[in-house]
Length: 237
Image (cartoon, rainbow, N blue to C red):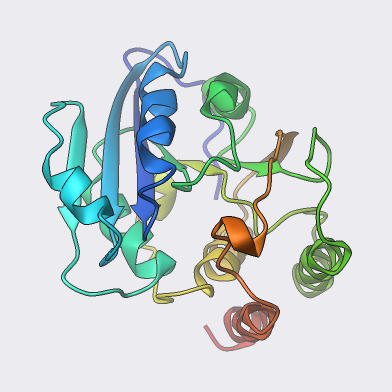
């Protein structure tokens, strides 16, 4: 299934931002998202996933009409928060943005270009081909291994399935039911894009990763969740 037409006429971008305990970085991130030079209409959908550090109160006080806020009653995981945001989105293109400052919204034009030009249905921003802050060797190897495992299972050449930046035509979600609530979200949506034969393009993005003292949440054990999800959605879904 592919959409071989160039995107024409008025186009709207929906930026979905799942948030959990990001009070230190969210104000700057939101400002960067709003100021990103996309050249098309946009809406911003922020989904708070039960924050307890003041993020929730910060979001409740927002008065920007371009920003929609969803306050989940309890923490359900990144996948659940993103799913709520996608359900609310009204744009022609959906872009997923983490709430920290690891990724740079000024690169939205680069991410949108393959879809707007009709060359892709889905775009992944790969951290392994752009400017990257030097951090943990084993974290790097874990990410590469998970992507390689996905490539072997699905006969593809993706370099970074765990990237935050997943951009896709909203119609790619038609008939797709996402199930994973936590770190299984990334392999699940990737598997469903691949199994539906959408045209996926990777573009390099800059990445300024945080260490654990700066609030990084993913741990080595989460890799087993990703492996399990890749196997599940390849053979049993």
